[in-house]
Image 1 (tube, helix red, strand yellow):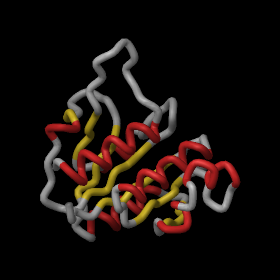
Image 2 (cartoon, one colour):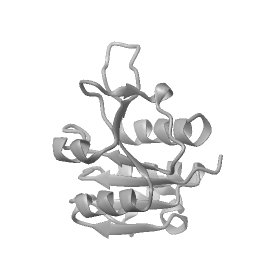
Image 3 (spheres, helix red, strand yellow):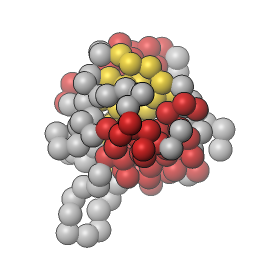
Length: 152
């Protein structure tokens, strides 16, 4: 349970989703959240309402360009993964990495942009068993953080 995890939250519209990502990040001891693109940043009432203070305990930074963040994390030895269902994506439970992991989260409807997926070392997805083929981004993020922290 000592693997380092960082998050890149790119172009996430909902302030409540960002707050929930912070709260899950605190639960799974994420070391940093990069808020990129037009993702909102604390302090915001809506973020704080769901983060319940985690926005004050998890280090975070605002960077408009996710590409430079990805490149820097790769230089630091991170395995960069996009959390996205796509052709050739790996089921989350099959993903393994000995290195620290950087998880890219994307827009609630559009997902992770193809240019960011192309920079990733892997694309992973959460298998869906019901009628719907996706989860809320903050729920998916929490599942991914748990799986990487505890199982990868």
